[in-house]
Image (cartoon, rainbow, N blue to C red):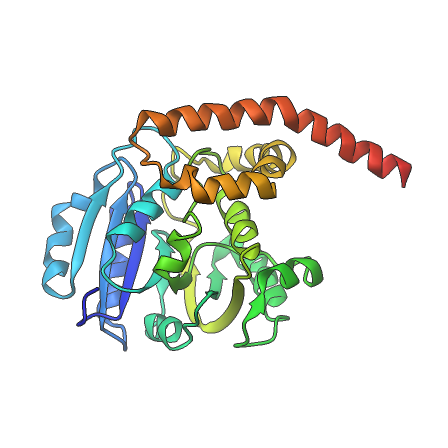
Length: 296
């Protein structure tokens, strides 16, 4: 680890270089400055834009690309970024946000082992009401107190835990398989991630002052179009998530699957096998679920 740095900030981007430049400007103004920045572009090479070079003189910076073409590689990009970090503690953000002055500080001072620190997300324009409602539910959690994620899922049904604007100790997440990258469909990454780490007694702590503003007017990502999100979310919830949330599957994922490099043929093979099991067993699980509801 780098003894001169305390925090690694991982930013994943896809063809939104102007937004990344804005985030770097926000990082220049942070009250806490002892951090490095890792920019990972998802197959579009944005991380190597020449306009980013001047910021490497201001703070330590790494530039990486997934080399994935026309695929939704958000999870892969995050995993690559985490492995490249030099610090024990990491903050994860996407490229469509604006940061407050004490953003990094509030994440870092609230760090806690085996705990996800989640910050506030503000919306603008048509997203403001939606985001305000989500934050209202999060504020129902005991403030600045870490709570088992499993407890939140059972007792705070309307709370939506999102894997953007979060921080954690890197090795604790890598040891549990980081982010699920075998199925590249919207609506899977966050739900699968929080379900998996909840089974290892991870906690969640909401910090209102670690604030970002989500910029809804950011350029649309062609690998994750807004008009396709609803359908993909339904498919994910009904057919995919019941399989990959299975405890036996999680065991094999953590112990074996997550350790396979995404560039290896074995990674592609595992992906095919997972889809095979989803196609075969998801309808069966759905029928069983329907029968149980009818019997009730």
